[in-house]
Length: 386
Image (cartoon, rainbow, N blue to C red; front, top):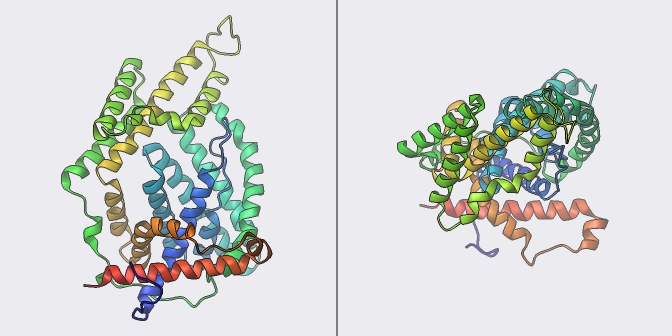
Protein backbone atom coordinates (compact mmCIF):
# COMPACT_ATOMS: atom_id res chain seq x y z
CA UNK A 1 0.00 0.00 0.00
CA UNK A 2 1.32 3.43 -0.88
CA UNK A 3 2.32 5.85 1.85
CA UNK A 4 1.93 9.60 1.90
CA UNK A 5 5.64 10.03 1.18
CA UNK A 6 5.53 8.16 -2.12
CA UNK A 7 5.37 10.27 -5.25
CA UNK A 8 3.09 9.55 -8.16
CA UNK A 9 2.88 10.77 -11.70
CA UNK A 10 0.63 13.86 -12.02
CA UNK A 11 -2.89 12.88 -12.95
CA UNK A 12 -4.00 13.36 -16.51
CA UNK A 13 -7.26 15.25 -17.10
CA UNK A 14 -8.93 11.96 -18.00
CA UNK A 15 -7.90 10.49 -14.65
CA UNK A 16 -9.23 13.57 -12.86
CA UNK A 17 -12.58 13.19 -14.63
CA UNK A 18 -13.09 9.63 -13.44
CA UNK A 19 -11.76 10.27 -9.93
CA UNK A 20 -13.87 13.39 -9.42
CA UNK A 21 -17.00 11.47 -10.38
CA UNK A 22 -15.89 8.52 -8.25
CA UNK A 23 -15.67 10.84 -5.23
CA UNK A 24 -19.23 12.03 -5.88
CA UNK A 25 -20.42 8.44 -6.25
CA UNK A 26 -18.70 7.43 -3.03
CA UNK A 27 -20.36 10.34 -1.25
CA UNK A 28 -23.78 9.21 -2.52
CA UNK A 29 -23.18 5.59 -1.46
CA UNK A 30 -22.01 6.78 1.97
CA UNK A 31 -25.23 8.81 2.30
CA UNK A 32 -27.20 5.69 1.39
CA UNK A 33 -25.36 3.85 4.15
CA UNK A 34 -26.35 6.55 6.64
CA UNK A 35 -30.00 6.16 5.62
CA UNK A 36 -29.84 2.41 6.14
CA UNK A 37 -29.00 3.05 9.79
CA UNK A 38 -32.20 5.08 10.27
CA UNK A 39 -35.09 2.88 11.54
CA UNK A 40 -38.03 2.55 9.13
CA UNK A 41 -41.62 3.20 10.14
CA UNK A 42 -43.55 -0.12 9.89
CA UNK A 43 -46.38 1.25 7.75
CA UNK A 44 -44.26 3.68 5.74
CA UNK A 45 -41.22 1.56 4.80
CA UNK A 46 -40.46 3.72 1.76
CA UNK A 47 -40.05 6.85 3.91
CA UNK A 48 -36.44 8.03 4.11
CA UNK A 49 -34.64 11.38 3.86
CA UNK A 50 -33.13 10.75 0.42
CA UNK A 51 -29.79 12.39 1.19
CA UNK A 52 -28.23 10.83 -1.93
CA UNK A 53 -30.36 13.23 -3.97
CA UNK A 54 -27.94 15.96 -2.88
CA UNK A 55 -25.46 14.43 -5.30
CA UNK A 56 -28.15 13.82 -7.94
CA UNK A 57 -29.05 17.53 -7.97
CA UNK A 58 -25.40 18.51 -8.42
CA UNK A 59 -24.81 15.81 -11.04
CA UNK A 60 -27.73 17.01 -13.18
CA UNK A 61 -26.53 20.61 -13.05
CA UNK A 62 -22.92 19.76 -13.88
CA UNK A 63 -23.05 16.75 -16.19
CA UNK A 64 -26.54 16.66 -17.74
CA UNK A 65 -29.40 14.20 -17.99
CA UNK A 66 -27.80 11.12 -19.60
CA UNK A 67 -24.85 11.17 -17.25
CA UNK A 68 -27.16 11.66 -14.26
CA UNK A 69 -29.23 8.61 -15.26
CA UNK A 70 -26.05 6.56 -15.45
CA UNK A 71 -24.93 7.91 -12.07
CA UNK A 72 -28.28 6.83 -10.58
CA UNK A 73 -27.89 3.31 -11.93
CA UNK A 74 -24.29 3.10 -10.68
CA UNK A 75 -25.25 4.36 -7.22
CA UNK A 76 -27.99 1.72 -6.94
CA UNK A 77 -25.57 -0.92 -8.21
CA UNK A 78 -22.75 -0.05 -5.78
CA UNK A 79 -25.10 0.31 -2.81
CA UNK A 80 -26.67 -3.04 -3.63
CA UNK A 81 -23.27 -4.69 -3.98
CA UNK A 82 -22.19 -3.71 -0.47
CA UNK A 83 -25.51 -3.58 1.38
CA UNK A 84 -27.45 -6.30 -0.43
CA UNK A 85 -29.86 -6.22 -3.37
CA UNK A 86 -32.66 -8.41 -4.61
CA UNK A 87 -35.21 -8.27 -7.40
CA UNK A 88 -37.53 -6.22 -5.19
CA UNK A 89 -34.99 -3.77 -3.74
CA UNK A 90 -33.31 -3.27 -7.11
CA UNK A 91 -36.64 -2.54 -8.83
CA UNK A 92 -37.69 -0.23 -6.01
CA UNK A 93 -34.45 1.77 -6.05
CA UNK A 94 -34.17 2.06 -9.83
CA UNK A 95 -37.81 3.07 -10.37
CA UNK A 96 -37.66 5.80 -7.75
CA UNK A 97 -34.19 6.95 -8.80
CA UNK A 98 -34.83 7.11 -12.55
CA UNK A 99 -38.19 8.88 -12.17
CA UNK A 100 -36.73 11.32 -9.67
CA UNK A 101 -33.71 12.11 -11.85
CA UNK A 102 -35.90 12.65 -14.91
CA UNK A 103 -38.26 14.98 -13.05
CA UNK A 104 -35.41 17.03 -11.58
CA UNK A 105 -33.77 17.40 -14.98
CA UNK A 106 -37.03 18.69 -16.47
CA UNK A 107 -37.36 21.21 -13.64
CA UNK A 108 -33.73 22.28 -14.05
CA UNK A 109 -34.07 22.67 -17.83
CA UNK A 110 -37.43 24.47 -17.78
CA UNK A 111 -36.99 26.62 -14.69
CA UNK A 112 -33.58 26.26 -13.06
CA UNK A 113 -31.49 27.50 -15.98
CA UNK A 114 -33.70 30.60 -16.14
CA UNK A 115 -33.31 31.35 -12.47
CA UNK A 116 -36.96 30.57 -11.69
CA UNK A 117 -36.14 27.86 -9.16
CA UNK A 118 -33.13 26.59 -7.29
CA UNK A 119 -31.87 23.41 -5.72
CA UNK A 120 -34.67 23.39 -3.14
CA UNK A 121 -37.36 23.33 -5.83
CA UNK A 122 -35.49 20.63 -7.76
CA UNK A 123 -35.05 18.46 -4.69
CA UNK A 124 -38.70 18.74 -3.61
CA UNK A 125 -39.87 17.66 -7.06
CA UNK A 126 -37.28 14.88 -7.06
CA UNK A 127 -38.40 13.61 -3.65
CA UNK A 128 -42.04 13.61 -4.74
CA UNK A 129 -41.39 11.65 -7.93
CA UNK A 130 -39.03 9.28 -6.13
CA UNK A 131 -41.86 8.42 -3.75
CA UNK A 132 -44.33 8.11 -6.65
CA UNK A 133 -42.03 5.67 -8.46
CA UNK A 134 -41.55 3.55 -5.37
CA UNK A 135 -45.25 3.60 -4.53
CA UNK A 136 -46.05 2.37 -8.05
CA UNK A 137 -43.66 -0.56 -7.60
CA UNK A 138 -45.10 -1.33 -4.17
CA UNK A 139 -48.62 -1.33 -5.63
CA UNK A 140 -47.66 -3.64 -8.52
CA UNK A 141 -45.34 -6.01 -6.67
CA UNK A 142 -46.57 -6.01 -3.09
CA UNK A 143 -50.15 -4.88 -2.67
CA UNK A 144 -52.54 -4.34 -5.54
CA UNK A 145 -54.88 -2.52 -3.23
CA UNK A 146 -56.19 1.01 -3.70
CA UNK A 147 -55.69 1.54 0.03
CA UNK A 148 -52.02 2.17 -0.80
CA UNK A 149 -53.08 5.51 -2.30
CA UNK A 150 -53.94 6.64 1.20
CA UNK A 151 -50.22 7.25 1.64
CA UNK A 152 -50.20 10.08 -0.91
CA UNK A 153 -50.72 12.83 1.74
CA UNK A 154 -47.74 11.47 3.70
CA UNK A 155 -45.72 11.40 0.47
CA UNK A 156 -46.49 15.05 -0.23
CA UNK A 157 -45.49 16.14 3.26
CA UNK A 158 -42.32 14.01 3.20
CA UNK A 159 -41.37 15.41 -0.22
CA UNK A 160 -41.65 18.99 0.99
CA UNK A 161 -39.79 18.40 4.26
CA UNK A 162 -37.00 16.08 3.14
CA UNK A 163 -36.75 17.57 -0.35
CA UNK A 164 -36.39 21.02 1.18
CA UNK A 165 -33.60 19.83 3.47
CA UNK A 166 -31.78 18.06 0.62
CA UNK A 167 -32.09 21.09 -1.65
CA UNK A 168 -30.85 23.44 1.05
CA UNK A 169 -27.78 21.26 1.68
CA UNK A 170 -26.90 20.86 -2.04
CA UNK A 171 -25.04 24.18 -2.51
CA UNK A 172 -22.85 23.57 0.56
CA UNK A 173 -22.17 20.00 -0.58
CA UNK A 174 -21.25 21.35 -4.01
CA UNK A 175 -18.65 23.67 -2.53
CA UNK A 176 -17.14 20.82 -0.53
CA UNK A 177 -17.08 18.47 -3.53
CA UNK A 178 -15.59 21.02 -5.91
CA UNK A 179 -18.72 21.72 -7.94
CA UNK A 180 -17.28 24.99 -9.22
CA UNK A 181 -14.20 23.24 -10.60
CA UNK A 182 -13.72 23.42 -14.34
CA UNK A 183 -15.25 20.49 -16.18
CA UNK A 184 -12.91 17.83 -17.51
CA UNK A 185 -13.10 15.71 -20.60
CA UNK A 186 -14.22 12.15 -20.97
CA UNK A 187 -11.90 9.24 -20.49
CA UNK A 188 -10.76 7.05 -23.35
CA UNK A 189 -11.81 3.45 -23.84
CA UNK A 190 -8.27 2.20 -23.37
CA UNK A 191 -8.32 3.06 -19.68
CA UNK A 192 -11.20 0.71 -18.91
CA UNK A 193 -10.53 -2.90 -18.16
CA UNK A 194 -13.59 -4.54 -19.69
CA UNK A 195 -12.54 -7.92 -18.30
CA UNK A 196 -13.82 -6.68 -14.96
CA UNK A 197 -17.34 -6.59 -16.40
CA UNK A 198 -17.47 -10.03 -18.02
CA UNK A 199 -19.66 -12.78 -16.62
CA UNK A 200 -19.50 -16.41 -17.73
CA UNK A 201 -22.40 -17.53 -19.92
CA UNK A 202 -23.74 -20.14 -17.43
CA UNK A 203 -23.89 -17.43 -14.74
CA UNK A 204 -25.74 -15.10 -17.10
CA UNK A 205 -28.22 -17.86 -17.84
CA UNK A 206 -28.84 -18.50 -14.13
CA UNK A 207 -29.28 -14.77 -13.47
CA UNK A 208 -31.77 -14.45 -16.33
CA UNK A 209 -33.68 -17.52 -15.12
CA UNK A 210 -33.78 -16.11 -11.57
CA UNK A 211 -35.31 -12.86 -12.78
CA UNK A 212 -37.77 -14.63 -15.09
CA UNK A 213 -39.01 -17.00 -12.37
CA UNK A 214 -39.18 -14.22 -9.80
CA UNK A 215 -41.24 -11.99 -12.07
CA UNK A 216 -43.57 -14.88 -12.92
CA UNK A 217 -44.48 -15.13 -9.22
CA UNK A 218 -46.44 -11.89 -9.63
CA UNK A 219 -48.96 -13.79 -11.75
CA UNK A 220 -49.20 -16.96 -9.65
CA UNK A 221 -52.03 -17.14 -7.11
CA UNK A 222 -51.88 -20.80 -6.16
CA UNK A 223 -50.95 -20.90 -2.48
CA UNK A 224 -49.21 -24.28 -2.69
CA UNK A 225 -47.07 -23.17 -5.63
CA UNK A 226 -45.99 -20.05 -3.73
CA UNK A 227 -45.14 -22.09 -0.62
CA UNK A 228 -43.09 -24.44 -2.81
CA UNK A 229 -41.32 -21.42 -4.30
CA UNK A 230 -40.36 -20.16 -0.84
CA UNK A 231 -38.92 -23.55 0.06
CA UNK A 232 -36.98 -23.80 -3.20
CA UNK A 233 -35.61 -20.24 -3.02
CA UNK A 234 -34.55 -20.70 0.60
CA UNK A 235 -32.88 -24.05 -0.05
CA UNK A 236 -31.07 -22.74 -3.13
CA UNK A 237 -29.85 -19.71 -1.16
CA UNK A 238 -28.67 -21.97 1.65
CA UNK A 239 -26.92 -24.38 -0.74
CA UNK A 240 -24.97 -21.44 -2.16
CA UNK A 241 -24.00 -20.27 1.35
CA UNK A 242 -23.53 -23.43 3.40
CA UNK A 243 -21.40 -21.63 5.96
CA UNK A 244 -24.16 -19.08 6.60
CA UNK A 245 -27.31 -20.89 7.82
CA UNK A 246 -28.81 -17.50 8.67
CA UNK A 247 -29.63 -17.02 4.97
CA UNK A 248 -32.64 -19.29 5.52
CA UNK A 249 -34.32 -16.53 7.52
CA UNK A 250 -32.64 -13.57 5.77
CA UNK A 251 -35.93 -11.93 4.64
CA UNK A 252 -36.98 -11.43 8.28
CA UNK A 253 -34.43 -8.63 8.31
CA UNK A 254 -36.95 -6.67 6.22
CA UNK A 255 -39.81 -7.12 8.67
CA UNK A 256 -41.10 -3.58 8.03
CA UNK A 257 -41.96 -4.60 4.46
CA UNK A 258 -43.99 -7.55 5.73
CA UNK A 259 -45.76 -5.27 8.20
CA UNK A 260 -46.59 -2.93 5.34
CA UNK A 261 -48.00 -5.84 3.30
CA UNK A 262 -50.09 -6.87 6.31
CA UNK A 263 -51.37 -3.33 6.85
CA UNK A 264 -52.46 -2.73 3.26
CA UNK A 265 -54.03 -6.15 2.75
CA UNK A 266 -55.65 -6.83 6.12
CA UNK A 267 -57.20 -3.43 6.70
CA UNK A 268 -58.08 -2.38 3.16
CA UNK A 269 -59.64 -5.49 1.64
CA UNK A 270 -63.26 -6.24 0.80
CA UNK A 271 -64.88 -9.63 1.30
CA UNK A 272 -66.17 -11.92 4.02
CA UNK A 273 -65.68 -10.43 7.46
CA UNK A 274 -64.31 -12.50 10.34
CA UNK A 275 -66.66 -12.42 13.33
CA UNK A 276 -63.90 -12.30 15.93
CA UNK A 277 -62.07 -9.52 14.05
CA UNK A 278 -64.75 -7.67 12.03
CA UNK A 279 -62.39 -5.19 10.38
CA UNK A 280 -60.41 -8.01 8.71
CA UNK A 281 -61.61 -10.17 5.83
CA UNK A 282 -60.74 -13.72 4.83
CA UNK A 283 -59.73 -12.42 1.40
CA UNK A 284 -57.38 -9.95 3.07
CA UNK A 285 -55.65 -12.68 5.05
CA UNK A 286 -55.21 -14.82 1.94
CA UNK A 287 -53.86 -11.85 -0.03
CA UNK A 288 -51.44 -11.03 2.80
CA UNK A 289 -50.12 -14.60 2.97
CA UNK A 290 -49.64 -14.86 -0.80
CA UNK A 291 -47.92 -11.51 -1.11
CA UNK A 292 -45.65 -12.29 1.85
CA UNK A 293 -44.59 -15.52 0.18
CA UNK A 294 -43.75 -13.63 -3.03
CA UNK A 295 -41.80 -11.01 -1.09
CA UNK A 296 -39.85 -13.73 0.72
CA UNK A 297 -38.76 -15.20 -2.61
CA UNK A 298 -37.80 -11.82 -4.05
CA UNK A 299 -35.65 -11.00 -1.02
CA UNK A 300 -33.92 -14.39 -1.18
CA UNK A 301 -32.71 -13.63 -4.72
CA UNK A 302 -29.91 -11.54 -3.20
CA UNK A 303 -27.94 -14.70 -2.39
CA UNK A 304 -28.39 -16.13 -5.88
CA UNK A 305 -27.49 -12.87 -7.62
CA UNK A 306 -24.38 -12.37 -5.46
CA UNK A 307 -23.19 -15.93 -6.00
CA UNK A 308 -23.26 -15.57 -9.79
CA UNK A 309 -21.68 -12.11 -10.03
CA UNK A 310 -24.79 -10.16 -10.96
CA UNK A 311 -22.80 -6.95 -10.43
CA UNK A 312 -20.65 -7.80 -13.46
CA UNK A 313 -23.68 -8.44 -15.65
CA UNK A 314 -25.25 -5.19 -14.50
CA UNK A 315 -22.22 -3.04 -15.31
CA UNK A 316 -21.90 -4.86 -18.64
CA UNK A 317 -25.45 -3.81 -19.51
CA UNK A 318 -24.63 -0.22 -18.60
CA UNK A 319 -21.61 -0.28 -20.93
CA UNK A 320 -23.93 -1.26 -23.78
CA UNK A 321 -26.52 1.43 -23.04
CA UNK A 322 -24.03 4.24 -22.31
CA UNK A 323 -21.11 3.63 -24.72
CA UNK A 324 -20.10 7.32 -24.71
CA UNK A 325 -19.95 7.71 -20.93
CA UNK A 326 -16.63 5.99 -20.33
CA UNK A 327 -15.46 8.39 -17.62
CA UNK A 328 -18.62 7.86 -15.57
CA UNK A 329 -18.47 4.10 -16.03
CA UNK A 330 -14.84 4.07 -14.98
CA UNK A 331 -15.82 6.18 -11.96
CA UNK A 332 -18.32 3.49 -11.05
CA UNK A 333 -15.63 0.81 -11.21
CA UNK A 334 -13.28 2.94 -9.08
CA UNK A 335 -15.99 3.65 -6.51
CA UNK A 336 -16.98 -0.02 -6.31
CA UNK A 337 -13.39 -1.13 -5.83
CA UNK A 338 -12.33 1.51 -3.30
CA UNK A 339 -15.47 1.97 -1.16
CA UNK A 340 -14.12 -0.33 1.63
CA UNK A 341 -10.80 1.55 1.60
CA UNK A 342 -12.62 4.88 1.95
CA UNK A 343 -14.69 3.54 4.86
CA UNK A 344 -11.49 2.26 6.49
CA UNK A 345 -9.90 5.66 5.98
CA UNK A 346 -12.82 7.34 7.76
CA UNK A 347 -12.14 5.15 10.81
CA UNK A 348 -8.40 5.71 10.82
CA UNK A 349 -6.49 7.71 13.40
CA UNK A 350 -6.52 10.81 11.19
CA UNK A 351 -9.76 12.18 12.56
CA UNK A 352 -10.86 15.73 13.00
CA UNK A 353 -12.05 16.77 16.44
CA UNK A 354 -15.77 17.04 17.11
CA UNK A 355 -15.23 20.65 18.14
CA UNK A 356 -13.69 21.49 14.77
CA UNK A 357 -16.48 19.66 12.96
CA UNK A 358 -19.08 21.78 14.76
CA UNK A 359 -17.30 25.12 14.45
CA UNK A 360 -16.00 24.73 10.90
CA UNK A 361 -17.75 21.82 9.13
CA UNK A 362 -16.81 23.02 5.65
CA UNK A 363 -13.08 22.91 6.42
CA UNK A 364 -13.39 19.45 7.98
CA UNK A 365 -15.40 17.96 5.11
CA UNK A 366 -13.27 19.64 2.44
CA UNK A 367 -10.13 18.27 4.08
CA UNK A 368 -11.64 14.80 4.24
CA UNK A 369 -12.66 14.91 0.56
CA UNK A 370 -9.13 15.98 -0.40
CA UNK A 371 -7.69 13.15 1.68
CA UNK A 372 -10.01 10.59 0.04
CA UNK A 373 -9.28 11.98 -3.43
CA UNK A 374 -5.55 11.69 -2.86
CA UNK A 375 -5.96 8.17 -1.52
CA UNK A 376 -8.03 6.98 -4.47
CA UNK A 377 -5.66 8.64 -6.94
CA UNK A 378 -2.73 6.75 -5.39
CA UNK A 379 -4.56 3.42 -5.27
CA UNK A 380 -5.85 3.82 -8.81
CA UNK A 381 -2.40 4.79 -10.09
CA UNK A 382 -0.94 1.69 -8.44
CA UNK A 383 -3.63 -0.51 -10.02
CA UNK A 384 -2.90 0.91 -13.49
CA UNK A 385 0.83 0.20 -13.30
CA UNK A 386 1.88 -2.63 -15.66
